[in-house]
Image (cartoon, rainbow, N blue to C red; front, side, top):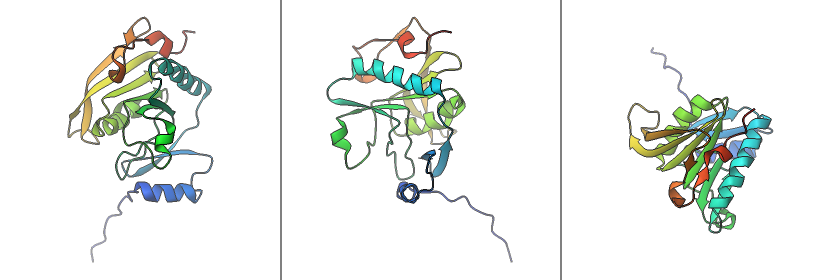
Length: 194
């Protein structure tokens, strides 16, 4: 008699929401990525403050007709429900009262302890969902990493990666793809030098 190897259980978005409703993750930040439930570490003060700094700057660019969501779910397929630090979606919060957005014009992740994860697995997921503009605010190196041009890459976890990655330091400027005439100072997106 052959004994079968154990298999990893992959969760759907509906199953994940049932677990949340049943209180499995009370007091914890959890997200569903590729069928796996990931419990995130608590936010430290620099990470939380940085999210607010970026939100404030993005509000100068994305006004009426756009919603800057902070740590809100995006429904990216049947088995992924990430909660990016910031996501800019077309519409208002009222447009999403019955369902989460399924895409975003811009996603921003603030990375300190999660830098490798945000550059790897999260980047591949966002690229596979066709997110054209993905920014990583790298707190370790105090820089903005701008990821654009999703392309197929079978070596990546979700089969896609960003073909163009640009590193920007304070003193440079950046314009979101969805608002190409609206220029932001990179220095205002990064924490102040200490």
